[in-house]
Image (cartoon, rainbow, N blue to C red):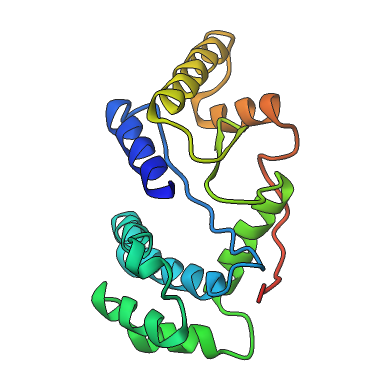
Length: 186
């Protein structure tokens, strides 16, 4: 379900390259064993390979065989398969103090908690909360609606640089800039 949603979002971004920005926040839910380690691996992929590396790692982890293999040895194998620095992954997972990756994930977690995101996939489309795996057509409808809202806001004088925050505050007050926390989930 998540792969279908990610594919639909990627297609929407390709269809509207100057209007759609895809931002993925990591929300390692406590009840999901291995979620924190998977989030660290994804954060490492982003740090080492940028957005392309992040999305490649995300697609890789959501492959059926990999999704169920998130123990420590599997994470090391996944990192190696993705061409990531396995020693840096080990350092991040074994560090007794929060790392930069931990802080980034904790910030994403705080954003998710402020919505609150209780499962995956969950999305904010210009601040409007959309939960669950939904068909590509519904995602396209949401995006079309938000593009109309964006054009209206720009016509009313909103600055393009502040457009997302403006629209997010209108759709869901308080979600645009949540305060980060430094909390590591199990």
